[in-house]
Image (tube, rainbow, N blue to C red; front, top):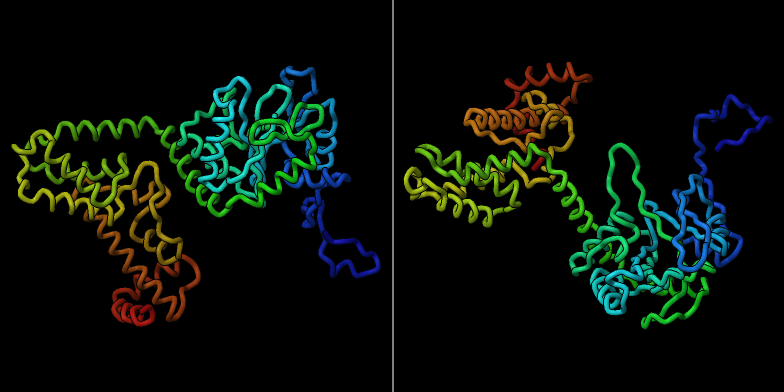
Length: 445
């Protein structure tokens, strides 16, 4: 932020308007207490905090969300106030996570905690801190990390790991914080809030491995957090977290499968179950077998060939109408290789590869008459042979145009403006394409 200096020439200084944000980052207000400073380094998020009166033992807190920015010093003051309870949500990154086991839940026992420890160790979390969360008697398993981790992938890793080990995540039994929050295109969604650990007067205690209380000291608890954080294998955990995030995303997209997709799949399954009804249908059916295997079964290479071959041989009407029985395996392999090579279809839901956004590529698409805004070309398969021929011609045209464009860039440079570029390419392509192609080959290879 620029400072005013009335003794200098203000005309030579950039002016800061009221609408311009300051480039200087404002530091959060930290607690004066040294233990408080340590605490908020790990446990603090300024938005969406929850507070409640600290009522009688066993009473359910009446939580409410505060709608103002919570400074670290304010959080520490609330934490130390025995008449109040405070809880936090999560930012985009976090240095801790909590597994909540309620008193009346299925996993409120030492056997379940030991199982959780074992499965978490497999993903790089080798040390956890066990707390009695409050006077309610539930357990909080605190996972501490030496550096901030991306919050959502971490939540995905915890959920997938526990689910794969047979644990059922549900309220009142086993919950993870941060949770795998839902995504909304219309508004920001928040992570669930969890009460802050080790609040005085709340019934929170540090426990040993036998679930016996050790201390209610915040300082000792933070020592345990630091020790645990130093032991975690973050490289392994990040790798698992990234894979888990992809799995959660796939699961959610599949749950959002549209009615059109359901009908699409049903139509293909009806054709597959009907099989051959006359002569001249082999190519059409093999094409559908391959597409179905890719889109809805996520099959590739040899497994896809095996599925299509088995489906074809066992389909109704195959023996009676198929005239390619002597070469059926070769036919199947041809369709599999062609479909994969040309990327006509990809697994549902997935993201087909797109051409890089260079001028040569995007201009070639435009000249060839392909619109990338309406529908991705990689997802379109030509059931009509004429459409397939048109598609092949457009691909060849794109390649020719790309060669010409790159050659012009290396030679004299592209004209300024899309109109002039459009005129330049057809003007020289017929006369000089061969020479530019040879130039391209020499320079490239």
